[in-house]
Image 1 (spheres, helix red, strand yellow):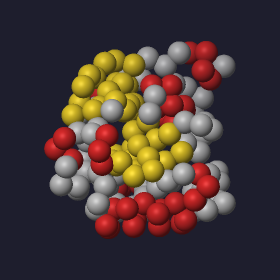
Image 2 (cartoon, rainbow, N blue to C red):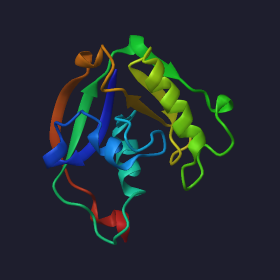
Image 3 (tube, rainbow, N blue to C red):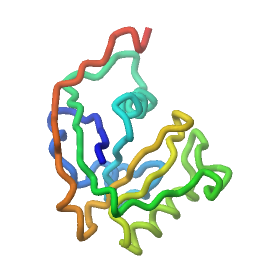
Image 4 (tube, rainbow, N blue to C red):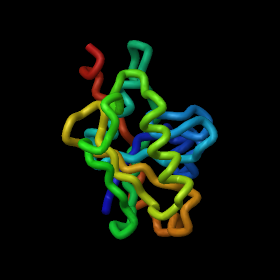
Length: 151
């Protein structure tokens, strides 16, 4: 399966999950390495845009296409998620779900619904999983943000 992520050129080839480990996210606590990817190019873009705090678009980004094996993905249907899973400020409920996924270490990837775009999905990758070596960068290309996005 092909998934996508946007990153600055400096970190385009870094699949270690270090950014999430250092800062935490909706699905992980600080200290837990997770590689966040999106099911589509457009979702990868939107997931970056929601975190921009300044009125300017970032420069020097790369769009990274990744291969992840289909046979090691666990999905959390929306119906099984706690009611606060997509709150503007992520709560502990989603972090606990991902922590259990990381600790059990049974699946390489966890498919989760996007909190930003209904009907779209993100794919969290565990860089400490035994099958992580199967994750491959398929393509890296320069990415320019359209200036109309923040008008």
